[in-house]
Image (cartoon, rainbow over all chains, first blue to last red; front, side, top):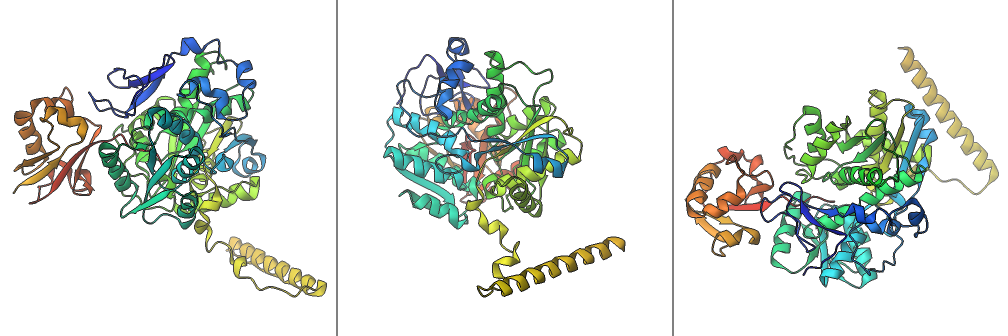
Length: 433
Length: 92
């Protein structure tokens, strides 16, 4: 179960040993996580702005710097999601050049996980796995199930038993085998590590992890290309395992190295976002620690609820090294963040996106990000999957209905106006106290 | 008070292929000291050059991360299953 390839291979970050291409995620010698390393020089003449512009409108336009086996013919237009100027949100939070990278509309399963799964499954096929799987808090489950169905590969997916119903349905509908585990994500993940050790299955985020993680680089390539081949000053990224934020940075570094973008005068600063109820990485950043102290997650932002993040130490270190910061927000704040992004930009994101939005607002309020700097907030998932989070926020759901008559409608509008006036006066009275 | 120690396949090349060991160690430092003498090659793999457990290994007692139980100061209970697992995990 291995293949040779001159363009890329597995390498250990700690000891530097190289391992070719095989389903392996930890260094057999020092146990550190493995990453894909590229022969960047050989890509110099092929990975150009012009060549990329000729490519498809998907992550595959960057295939030369993704670990995709030679000859693999991808047929799903994954990624290449909108980078939207967020003028109205910006106005509300005091940001002049704010952008939203909108993976709430990533194809095919509406989260940035489609990117990583696409790359992982290309390798699963190459390695000859007939069953693939993952440990997941939902988005990854949806994506593995959808893309495995498309490729005709069996999928077995393990999730914490208390997952949101929408994410469970969004997995089952593709015909995947779903196994609910009594425990949190960290328990599920540990079990998957044991299963991958015993069964000949390709777990996208366990034994295929180095390939999978590289898919996240496409977020960084797209941001740079969509900004007109330049890098932003700041990026705000939600953190669960701590992988995405590092891969966006890796993408930027590759683009600078190969001359597709100019090296910025000041390094791009990375800002990590977590929910306070599961904030091992932000805690490490704030305390200036490299070591991560694991936490027992307690937040509605389940897609970020990893208490023992494997890439956490590296993420914390890199955030501080480039002059960035990390913040965490409460469940109440993250729900307000969901509403704020929807009300200002028409983008309905899930709980993780609420975290990113609320943290972005806080970073401007703290002055850690300056008003005029170009900043990209990375929205990674879709709000339709976590509608439970908004339960109780809208009493309108239970509002009375009216008869289909114009007079009734006019009376109804008047009563709404009256309510609004009354609540406005109450606010004024409170403010005057 | 015997405990059961469970190892991933990656470690078994240092233990004559054994994935499970019995031990009467009373806590983690004692267990690591025992491994030093019984499987020195394994000890080299799981510890760094300063003799500390490598940061990429997680220790679980039954279903719980040992860091939630007090870490080195946790006293093994009769029948505990102690698992050594590389922390390759992550992802959502």
